[in-house]
Length: 312
Image 1: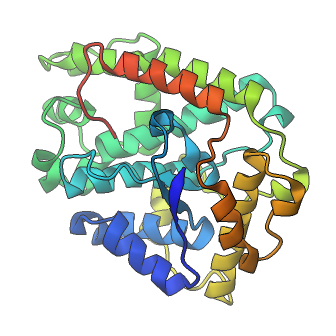
Image 2: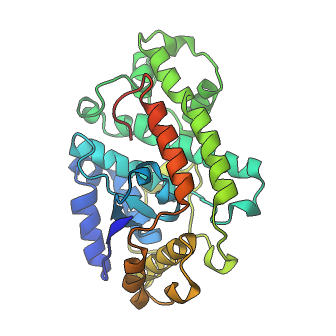
C-alpha cells in the first residue's frame, strides 16, 4: 500500500470522490448510485491507495475501508466506476473486525452473502439501473444478458441472491440455459466457490487481533434492503457536524489499519491530527502478507482458466 490519498477537509474529499473516483457521469447522476456514494462518504470515508506489490491487487482491503486504485487497468470510465461501486457496496455491510468472536460457519455465511450481493449489484443490477451502458461494459455474456434473454424484469435483491446461490451449488435453470452462453456464465459463477472458501479460511485463521475498543461497527445496511434505503438516502442530515464525522471515520480507518499491520502502540493515532504521521509509517505495509500472496496467485491462476480478461 502506498500513495495514500489523505484530505483534511471533507469538501476536498467529496470533490475527489466525484471527480477522480467515480469518473463516469452515469454513476454520479443515477439516484441509487448517488445514494451509495453519499452513504459511504458519510459513514465510511474510505482511504484510497496505489499498488505497491503485485499481491495487493486481489487483497480485500475494502473490508476495513481502504480501496485500491487500479489506475488504467479497466478499459473505460464506466467499468472503472463500476469497480469502485462494487467496493462501495461491500462497505455497506457488516464486515466483522474480530472474526474469531464468531463461529467459522457464521463468518463464512456473512462473507459469502456479502460477496454474492455485491457481485449481483455490479454484474446485474447496474444494467437494470443504467440499461444504456451495457454496450460500454464487458464484451462477453453476463448474468444480466441471460435474464434479459429469458424475459426477466429487474429482480428483487433476495430473489437474485437465491438464484446465484443455487446456481453456484449446481442448480439448473432451463429458461436461462436457452441462452447459448449460459454454461459459460454458470461456470464463471461456480468457479469462485472454491476461492471464496479458501479466502474465508485464510482470513478467519490469520486476521490480526484487534482490541474490542477499536472494533466498534459503524452503521451497516441490511443486505436485502440496501437498495431501497439508498434510493431515498438524504445526505447531510445524519450528523450535526459533517466535518467532525468525517474526521472520526478517517481516524477509525487509520487506527484499524495500524492495528492490522501491527504497528507499535505508540504509532496508533489518537486524534485526527495524528493521522498523516501514521499514514507515512504505513507506506509499503501489507496486511497479512502471506495471506495476500497465497490468495492473489490462486485468484490469478483461476482467472486465466476459461474466464474473461476483465472483471469487477
